Image (cartoon, rainbow, N blue to C red; front, side, top):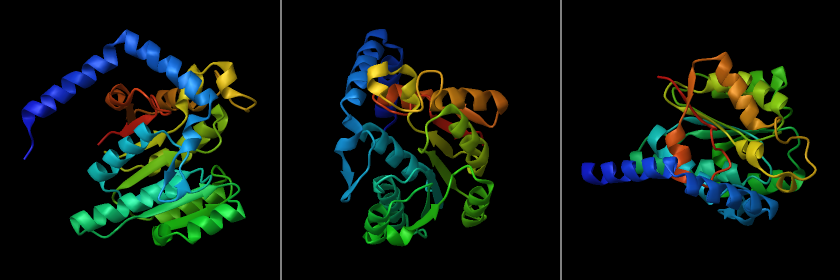
Length: 248
């Protein structure tokens, strides 16, 4: 049974967080320093590096429980921790609900052999399909579309090359795979607001990053809306303005 009083209290707290200018200032400063010090590299999920902030991990867990996706599509495999996380969440949803467990599709232009071996040796590998190739190559997009098939509930996560051009092409290719009511989550939108020393020698930066791509994509379509309440609740997130809900 839902505790409506508690839910209202929590909603009020999120509203306060989202409108507190001092909190926003302190959070921005913390994010800049944390990124400079490589904070996101410090965490594992079931034994593999996940390279995400704990707050975004919790947010994704909440979305997966709420949406119960049959398929999760992720661009950017890295060391595989995110794939293992998504697969384990789908396994838990299946155990708790009795529904068939979903699958995770991971796409990366270069799945390095040690990472592939670690993913394929993991108990959660049975829920994962790996696709090697550029995520914006039409042939790869077509392959992923076939793997998604006619799934009724699809969640999309974009976390590969973070340049504006690449993310925009990923959005155009994969966001439409997101089913109505579900989410397309674009990671590392925080790059737009980071100090230069936190970005380092990367091909992306201020004015050329996932957030600028999100804003351009949202200007092209009315199919998605930014879920700012997730931003307000998390505060610490690499995906601010990146939680995009597809209109039902």
